[in-house]
Image (cartoon, rainbow, N blue to C red; front, side, top):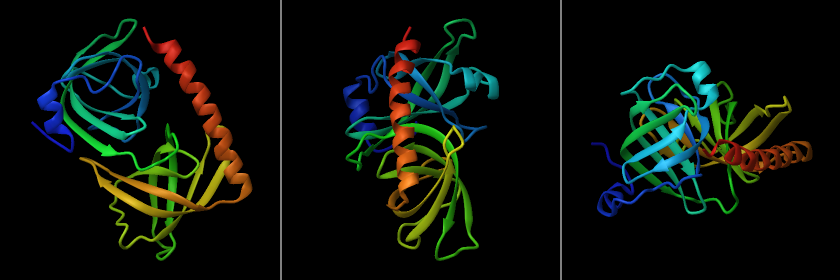
Length: 226
């Protein structure tokens, strides 16, 4: 059984780490780097049930026994769970039950609420301009983003970079960022990038994106909690 920071405490208490109605994102461990939002429907000490996201049903093929990663953010921590699909019902309301065997909890270092997203991005290392790295923004707020990459980015050697991405509406945003953290996950790397310089138009676009995401989150929870 795999472990992680927070694992021993979880095993000792054997209490649910998520609650009904929590917003989570899930990722098929083997086939995809993309994450899909859904809502926790039921939760016990080592099992979580959620509705199968419609986008995931269109683009991924899941089966019992497949491994999935579950991500959740709250005010105190970032929670990463992993486990195997124990059961999957492809009839409405499309419930999936996952047996959890891995837990990792990372203290939240951000003062502002972050929103879960899944946006393609490009990283341009300023000290090595020939190095352009594909990434995916996993969460965002006004102060920075979390970027998932296949490549290791070391805060000791990567000082600053330019980040380029577009909102779902097609608004292009770029900012100068400072790499402030790196966490090695099982199959990718999660990098915290602080926004150190952004123009007024870019900052306004992020504000509008966050406002829409927060409104969408409230509606999403209300519509998908069954």
